[in-house]
Image 1 (cartoon, one colour):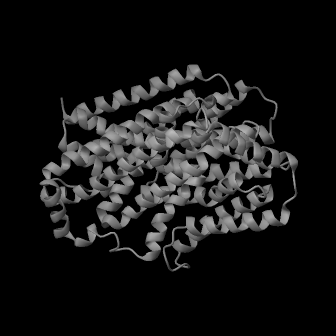
Image 2 (tube, rainbow, N blue to C red):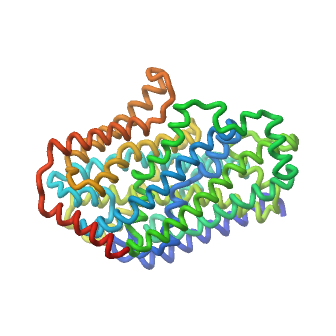
Length: 497
């Protein structure tokens, strides 16, 4: 059997496992809460790894290694920023959000939580939140589908568009039927696959490059700047890379996991598991890229056409095709775990926060679950159309969507959990100003009006924060129900810890 045949067998086994999990979850999905939040039944390990897998996406095994392969450790500042931001997210946001969403009318979506938290009689906050989610997740899902197309093109020589459709089809199938439980269980398995693959590839590759000392000597001989955190970047560049960490507070597909864990107390265990997974995965990514530089220098007979395929290519070269197939499946796992998480949150926003609020408030759970599944299908089609012409890198697409959520939702979520006097009008002002700043700043930078490359999440986050504080102070009125729920969320936090 050819190498490609062995690898396709591994990919087929992986995809079949995803569909089986989807079917299993379908049988456990009985109502809208099950479909959108898994009935708040996740344990700490599933919560941690599903959040991590949903977070990292294809850029962990393709976009980030590709960036480090080209520019060296200067791009690794992103990994530092993400690690710090993820820890802060687990420590500050996870327990409080789990507590507050339960108190605030048992909210099952982020827009629903904000609506219930501020008692917004206008429903504007919920509607605007849902619209922001739709806009930025469409780009985010599109980036995942681009990753899928690149994956099949680089690994098997399959046409980019065919690969895109394969990834979209399998992901949509298990997400559409199994809902949040399918997404979480598949993310758990996919997270394990990603971790094993990211540790295995550099561990094997470094033996071929002569061990650690010879490997780094080879890299220095190519360009010493590749091993310098500061060469090839600027202060603004480092700030921009570290600022990726700010995005965590506003990523609906990640923080919704905090809402789904069984108890507040279990968020501490989940934090330890999640951070361990993340640190080892990021280290594996960095070393895969660096060792890849030395490997392709020592073995010029192997041609790396696309730097974003460094992990894929090393895996195919270094191990038996059947094992390589499972390493390749880990890349698919990274892609599909994030796409599925984003699809379920987007579906929730469409049905729970827009359709249910604007059109049909008193529908049945069966109707909403059916429409939620149709929403998954429609959003997937739109994202696939956007991804059909591959006109941007994976990292750039992810960066824009990440900034959009971090700049729009980040300060809103943080202050809603910690500041009693925040108001619905402050939240609305923050959401709109943050999202608009991200979009406008990115456009002005692209056309050269802004002469330096500051990541748009930084101005978006700052403008959002200022808008919330100013507008909330101007519009604050004492509301006894809000005060009681805020106090109750803090009490529940203490009692369950």
